[in-house]
Length: 50
Length: 358
Image 1: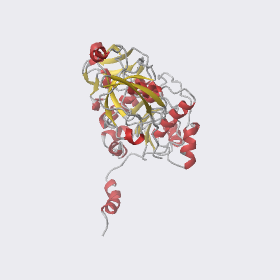
Image 2: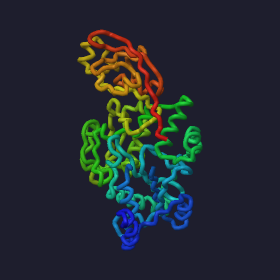
Image 3: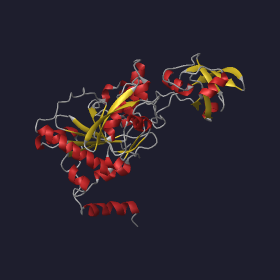
Image 4: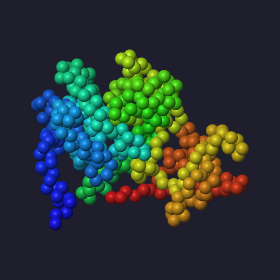
């Protein structure tokens, strides 16, 4: 029998497929270059996950 | 984990939600490792597990979003106020693109690898450079170099509630209630803070960061508020100990652990005991069980500490506990003069250093 966490992992892509989420980049330098090219501002999150 | 729910709410915002629509106008970046981050540019109080910056491609910061109070990491986080800040960020960005935004001096780059004890203790062991470790090891290095200013670098992020400011958090910097010093200065509920000591502010994170930069010797600050479209300057007299915050959530190794807590004596108590009116004498109100285990001291609840190493007054401390935290190095020892049952006795006190869990 699948454990609940495994079921959630299987269902997650299907759940999120209903909605378009924000594309969060993970490389600041690349994002800065993209901001320059697109003339968009940057919004940077610093998240301590430890 | 602090901020987990708020983090998920922001990061998993659908593009067609109110927050998602405004976030879509930004290049969004999520950084979970601090190893190579320019902490000179992205300076903040490092005892926050979640923090945001809005800026442009020239690395001019529009606003900070984050910040906490001592007893909760989540008090000032809300999707509504983040939406307001992001909208205001877009207004600034339009000015930037039109060449109408005043230039800011970019802070000097500074990286975690420039903090020697962080390199020795964290990088060398291939461990995660947790945000709080940056602040902790910066202070350790400052202490080693003899430049640690505990008033500003240990007691970071003064609490706006000490000024009597209570925010309507979802509304950003709108005042919900104004009491004490800010009420006396004329601030009213419904006012919206727009500037702190001359620097424009958009968020609580901006306010807390700018408040933290106020000289601890300052007697007053200037806050500008918007009241019904009118800009009003409010001169606020800072109360005694305005900079003090509860350090218990900080886990800082430069904070001497004392195994007791005290309270200031009242003027009447000082007079009754024949102590100076400006004395930092205090009454012990709590003694940790660890005091016996570590043999830190022999203080008892009700004792009155009248002097530390012969010193009985201080321009900043109003209790012996605060005097010790400000003036002795963690791990250091002192001699206390104590009134117990009408007799003056002396005893040693040994402080200790908090060990990091890593």
